[in-house]
Length: 198
Image 1 (cartoon, rainbow, N blue to C red):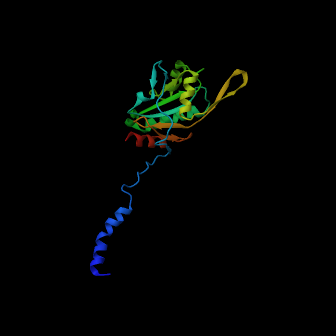
Image 2: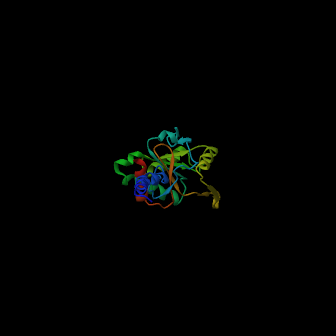
Image 3: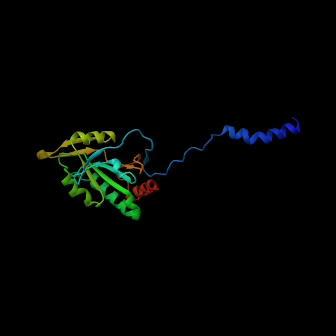
């Protein structure tokens, strides 16, 4: 091979290599502690009755990060534990905590009236909001977020609910972003909320 041909090949090598590489580097995944749900095809906007008696929609909270949790006020362990973790996460966020809205959707609308929710949800943090509705409305919203709840009959006519125990973080644009498993500590919740507040 002549010296001139070798020089031409060496000069063209960067363009040949560039043609073989992707035009843009792959998008970097955000380092969430929870499970990244970006781009999933479930969830979405909904409207229910808030604990102050006013009807509100998820979209009313655009601009904030929303923590969405489904439970019920008679829940003996999972619900209060999760609500306490979110309260601790909000405190850990300091001033940034103003950008977080926790919504507690009751899976037990027969017992969890707005008045009952008003006496329960703000106990964890005065900014937290309880939501309820008719049984059909609640079931529809729960279904959209893949939440399962089964009534378990107890003694004396009482009952409990076995239900999905995780929670969701929704970005400021209203898109579902992160699933947080039950038992996620407050510092991990705060970490992921900070990412979404950026």
